[in-house]
Length: 213
Image 1 (cartoon, rainbow, N blue to C red):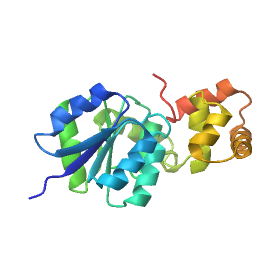
Image 2 (image 1 turned 180 degrees about the horizontal axis):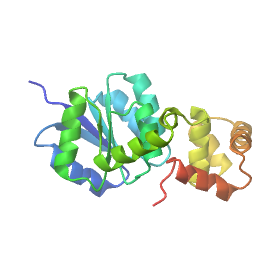
Image 3 (image 1 turned 30 degrees about the horizontal axis):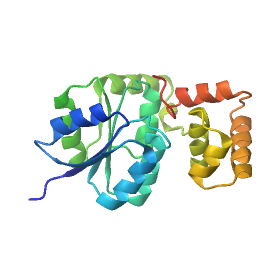
Image 4 (image 1 turned 120 degrees about the horizontal axis):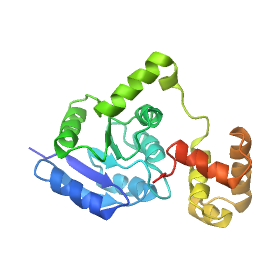
């Protein structure tokens, strides 16, 4: 019987090494990647069954990578493993078609349980986050259904600008013109009612586009 194939996506190589040690007795770890753009490329090549992905990665964050991956491979299972304890971000991850949401403080058995569950078609959310999501739902039943207003391209531009990249760098990385990048930046700032670059960074951190750690 063929073993389940898992790809790891985290920009910390020691984290990937630790995950591989936990998972390999049970599953086949087919590789690891360090940024969201590389993740999309490698998934096309390796066609894994499960991707364990960090929320905050360079170039393309885990949330937006997840959206792309689900369009590419609708059957793929996405397990978020992150330091982000924000229940709103967890809800956004689940809306992005994640199958599980765990914290990096979770113990190894919880990770194995989450992978086992998603392979059976059952979603898994770590208890701490699940309680917070339930409390949010009790306060406002519509809150967990709300999605972010920015388009996929706007979020890509937002992330790269928040990471401190210049307009020229963003233009090169996304293969779009300098003028188009400026257009997207202006649209983002107007749409979010943001006036400064520092506010742009704060928004990106608050909404899980870049890491606040």
